[in-house]
Amino acid sequence: MVSDDRQKAKDNLNQHYDWPCVYKFKFIVPTVPNREKELMGMFSVDVEVKTKISKNAKYRSFTINAVMLSADEVLEKYAKASEIKGLISL
Image (cartoon, rainbow, N blue to C red; front, top):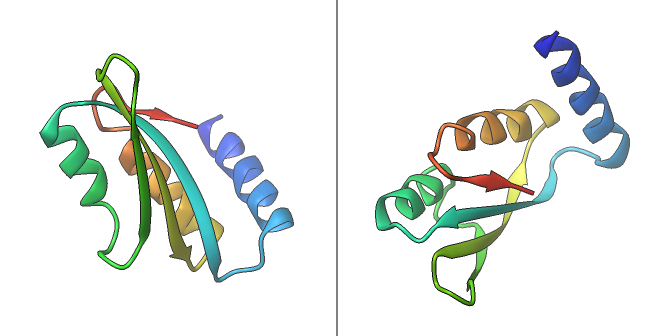
């Protein structure tokens, strides 16, 4: 079942993007230094990152523009990000 969902997501990405391309990731992470470092460790240093702290400073949103070579690479990033405690993918 999971592979069917992954295939649907891959097909959807392939319909909307021509690889390689700049892909925009959006995440919300609890404002905990280790979690933010974990997220940023998934990407190379040459990505464009914009952050914003929530009103109560409990969360930080990340918009990360990174060059991705394929839909599989995008899905791998999301899978790895899902392992970060408290992270929300948008």
